[in-house]
Length: 212
Image (tube, rainbow, N blue to C red; front, side, top):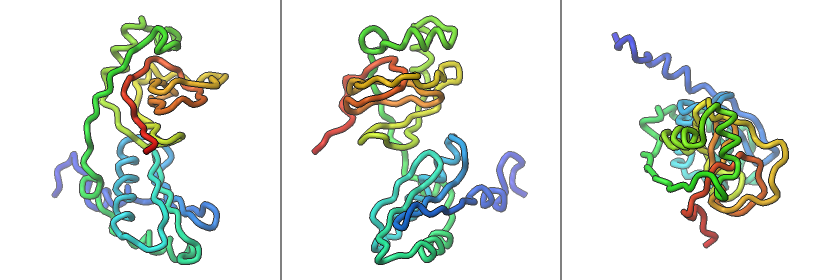
C-alpha cells in the first residue's frame, strides 16, 4: 500500500481532468480548474510542456496561464475536433516529470515614498505599519504563474492574505516601469510604463523586458 499521506495513482490521475473549450476557429483553451493555486498551475505548465514537445506542424503558439493552456493553431491544417482528440490522448505526466526546473530570481525593490505611493494605504488596509507591510511582502518566495497583460509582466503569487488589497477603483494612466504592485492575492512588476490599476508599493531598478 502507498503511504497514507501520498495520493494513490488513481487519485493522482483524477486531478489531471480538464475540459477543452473552443476559442474562435483557431484556438482551443484547456482548463484545469477555476482557482489560483500552485498545484493547478504546475499541471498547466506540465501540460503546456508536453504539447510543446510534440512539435506538431500548424501549432502557432502555446500559452499557459494561471489555470489553463491556450493552443493556437492554423485552421487550414487543423480542425478543433481533431486537435481536441489529440490533446486528450497525450500522456498525463505528473508536474514533477514534465515541468521545467524553476530558477530563483532575487529582485531588489525600493519600497514606499516616491517609488511606492500606495504603500501606506496598503499597510493601513492590512492593519500594519509600513515597515511591517514591507517585511511581509518581501518574506514570500513567489511563483511566476504566468506572463501578461503587457510583454514581460510577471503575475506572481500568492500574496499573504493580509496584504490582499483589491485593485484601485480608478486606474492610473501611467505606471512607471519597474513598479511593484498588489492586486488581491497577486503581486506583479510592470516591465514598461503602462496604464494600470494595481496598488503600487515599490519599484525595482531591474529591467525585466528588452524589445530586442
